[in-house]
Structures are given as C-alpha cells and as structure tokens.
Image 1 (cartoon, protein in one colour):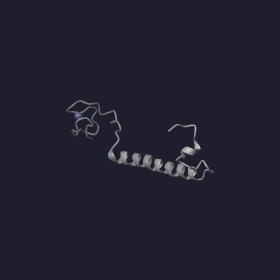
Image 2: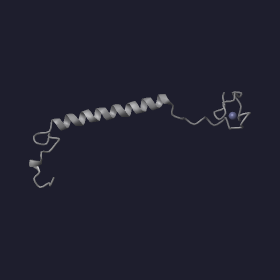
Image 3: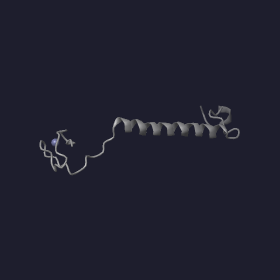
Image 4: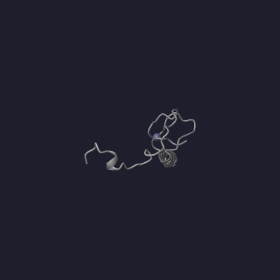
Length: 81
Ligand SMILES: [Zn+2]
C-alpha cells in the first residue's frame, strides 16, 4: 500500500510509514476529485435549469395582468419615475 502522506510504498500490513512514520491504520480521508466536482456541479446546474424552466412556465401561465414581467408605468401611477 502507498502512504497517503508521502506516497512511499509500504508493506500491506505496515502500521506506520517507513519514511514519514504516518499512521497507516487510519484510512486516508476522502478528498473530492475533478470527476466528483463535475458530477456534483452538473447536478446543481441541471437542477437550476429545471427550476428556471419550471418557474418560467408557471409565471407564463399566470392570469392577466400577472403574467406581465415588465410593468408599464401607467399601471403604477403612484410610483415616481
Ligand atoms: Zn509516508
């Protein structure tokens, strides 16, 4: 097995690394790789796209005048421009 600290080859039953004396009985901590990043970011991005499409669909189906996204100023005369 390779030492997770210095990548030195050690015996499979070694309890500590012969070079840096790192404890080899503890499994190395999991660190995210680029494959993991790509998968997770892809899932997040796909979720955002689905959310955007869904929200756009719901907003387009709203009854008048709530479907308007840009409010004409004559509809809000109390707002000073
Ligand atoms: Zn080592």
